[in-house]
Image (cartoon, rainbow, N blue to C red; front, side, top):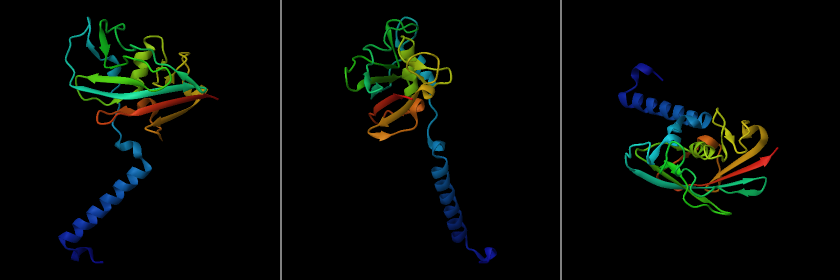
Length: 187
């Protein structure tokens, strides 16, 4: 084919085809490229309370979380993220009101602006109350021994019944209610 003899339409079509192929290859070989970056600051946000100005809630949504360790249900205590150090008489942007004894517990996500709230932010909040937390590298640390759970457990994460590999960085989004299940099995 003579490149000099190509019409503008042929050039545009060739450019569109090349862009489509490049986009497809990027999506297949590097899918994380299109995922939003987590807003880890979500674990520090506070609604009301004595130490913060109340900037109001403009985004309020929910995800649910269920955890098991070696086939035993791991309960999330009620009021996790409510009236904790640094947020006295207030609520963290991610908090729990009621706990489920055997099923999914509702995580309330209430922020003053739209954020990409990662699941790991809830663990940072829970860890401040002596519950499972995160290592400094932002890896799960359910037994709070400072060792990444990836060294001690096989971890499976299901989101709405489908396996997910985003784990700590999984973004809980406003336009859907995710049912998140974390399964920790000792190695």
